Amino acid sequence: MSKLIYILNGPNLNLLGKRQPEIYGHDTLADIERDCARVGEEFGLDVRLLQSNHEGQIIDWIHEAREQAGGIVINPGAFTHTSIAILDALNTFEGPVFEVHISQVHKREAFRHHSYVSHRSDGVMVGFGVEGYALAMRRMGSLLGK
Ligand code: DQA
Image (cartoon, rainbow, N blue to C red; front, side, top):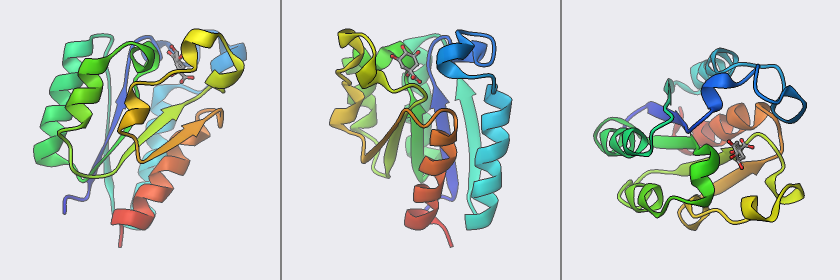
């Protein structure tokens, strides 16, 4: 079992820290990467954090994860609510998949209430801010770590 965890981020999450901070907070992807790496160290897991605004790129990384990674943490951004293709890709991955949403999507617009990705996710962190990523990593550690 690979000790590498892919942490995949979808569209607009490159702007984390600058984008609607009242919803998404002030932390950046670099802060998330640092926090996840710290949790990973506790459990003997490595992390690779990636972000793309392009659906196909995220699918390619999921395919890469099939070869390289033991688990996937994914915040697909708005693709959560639209992408059967990302769901199909995740369905080809055998390890644990945890879905993260920084905001509490169920308190927001109705179009954010449905997640295609949740049809595959083994767990979902919703509304815990950026801490949701580290919490998902902790669970990854319990499942795959030392
Ligand atoms: C999000 C919620 C999505 O509805 C939104 O499109 C995002 C971010 C979140 O982390 O809360 O881009 O996934």
